[in-house]
Image (tube, rainbow, N blue to C red; front, top):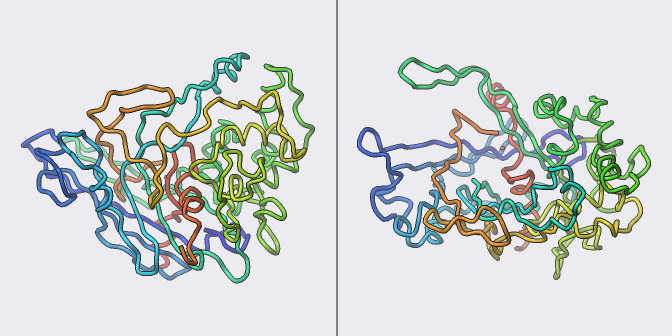
Length: 419
């Protein structure tokens, strides 16, 4: 989390996961009986985590051996999954809470938008491809005072994942990880990594620290002259906005003046900026800032924000003109998640049960449960009063990318070298 506009992490929250697998040679089952508590012996595969807060050279342990919510195997195995989730919500001494575990995928999109923008036929939109799917979620709720600095209410948030430089596969099938941890992925705004950064730059971008974004002209050029408007013009005949795109430069790299641009000098960087001084909207609009709801995306990102439709409109010049492009007003036709979000932390919907009837897509899904786990620290995978507005910050932290995960995680090797 950057709280002074220089694109360098001032605060880092880091999760380290540990797995305990008691199955051994006895069974292939995730659990061998009903699970009514996260501590039940019938739950054979368990995970815990340590949560640390890093400020410069200071590392503070906030939680130790906090439990990860198990995957929702099914109704017979976990007759009251909501109770299991509740056990996995751990309070913090400074206020707020932490959660790690499975949830419904909160991202909603008709992924056929990547099929040449529906092949020129917008009448085919409206199929929620992620309905009925689950993801692993890390959610954090902290007081505003924990993440802001001085009088500046704006923070910049991004997530990274790291892996050891070497993986050793032994003849007996065991694996070992060695070497320093290196950054292998990052995300700030949703969809920038996916649709703004070209394939040839993705590896470099994923390894780059935000403070260095402006030093890569090819990446900056893709913000000033994006590909999507050209594709829309070629397929639908809607003229692409003139370049260079100073409007997108502010949305994606500096923050929008008067909305979420930090005070003082700003280092251009692809981070998700949130103005914490803007109160939550009484009636949130799914189109966020484009609809006059300044508490929504791209000022942070709430779970209910329709980031696909907002991004399409922004790429087509709606931020510059202040008007929606009517020909694309329907967007991808998916305006909300398949399940309602919760009204309390961690806000994401409960995961779909493994014993449910799977629905590959559509407005409502009831399948897709499974036994996926949060990665171990040894094998990380690619990501109230005076409190952060709940849906705003949880979304800013949890919904950074296509599937949503995490907050800023600095390179482990660098931090260990300091300590």
